Each structure stands twice: as structure tokens, then as C-alpha cells.
Amino acid sequence: MLLLMTVVAMAFFRSASAELVVITNANNGINKLSKTEIVNLYMGKNRKFPNGLTALPIDLRNTETEKAEFYASLTGKELPEINSYRARLHFSGLGSPPLQAESMDEVLNIVGENKGAIGYIDRKKLDKRVKLIYILNPTP
Image (cartoon, rainbow, N blue to C red; front, side, top):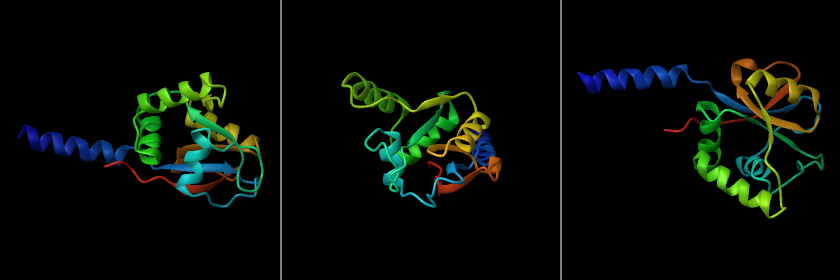
């Protein structure tokens, strides 16, 4: 009985979770990016979009569900691994972490107002200021 309740609860939480998508400003000239291109922008390996526009990655400040899901889906790594990598990059002078936003609404506003911004939000929050360039697959 406990096992059945656990399975039902897990199914409920999975269905209630956000469908994360990667977005850019509607006017930045990018219509699609590959998973590798997004990883390289978020992990500091590239600082520009393929069209030469300087990228401004936006990250959620929270360390809860959405941020963990984003990095797990994108890189296959957990947040402590991501944070460790970023710390090494920052202290070596080779990069800095993405700009931190408090909420998906703030991510949406920043991306909507900055031509070079890239972020991730729940698909339900999409509006005309941004465009969807990548759909994240939920982690198993």
C-alpha cells in the first residue's frame, strides 16, 4: 500500500511540474539552438550566440526544482557539480556565473527587455516578448 501511494504521489508531482523551455528575446535573430550550444552558453564556454550577439544567460536563483531540473536535463549533472565547475571557472578568471533572477516572471522580464538575454521558464509563461528556442526533456 505504501509503495502504491508513493508511485501515485510521484506521478502527481511529475505532472504538476513545469515544462521548462529555453527562451530568447523575440528580436535577437536566433530561432533555435542545439542542446550543446545552450550548455556552452550557460557553462561559460561561449559568450556569444552563433549570430555574434553577446549572450546574457539568466538563471533562477533558487536551488529547488526548476533550476535542478534545468541543469540535470541539460548537462546530466546535479547543482553541486554545476556550482563547483562555476567556482573553478570564476576563480581562474575565465568566466562568471549567469545573472540570477528571483522568479520565472523576472527571467521573462529580463529576456523580454534585453536582446542578448537567454533564460528558461515554464512553457505556460511564454508571451510575445520572447521566443521558444529549445524544449527541455524532463529527467527520468
